[in-house]
Length: 146
Image (cartoon, rainbow, N blue to C red; front, side):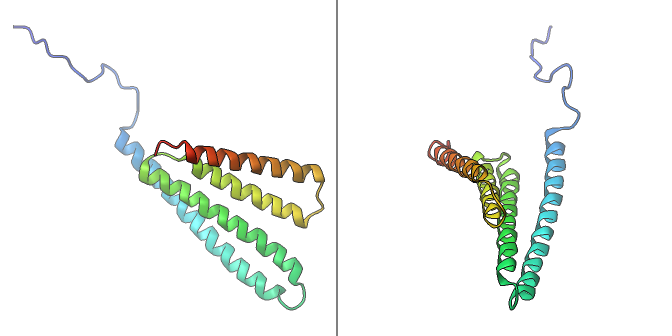
């Protein structure tokens, strides 16, 4: 008698690693990146406190400028950690998280233009990009499949 069963295994493999091993390797590297970002945030926070201590009595305005920039960078790194965590938990990255990171970084750039010698065209371009990202963020939140 002939065996008429259909095999579901392909005749050739199109991947080198299994899905489980690939996920474990990606998770390992993302974990290393998250540890590096945690250390970077901790050093940035310590740098922020040291800068506050050294700039308090004499040069407070210049110190405040640096502290605001450092704080925005720390917030951007927190958003980046949130993106990595979402990838590890749900296996994908939500567009809203990426837009949040971009918004925090661009707002930080806009704040740094405030303290530097800036061109009005640069500020207008930054404001337009931030406004369009806000509109995209609202659209992605409203029409999200989740």
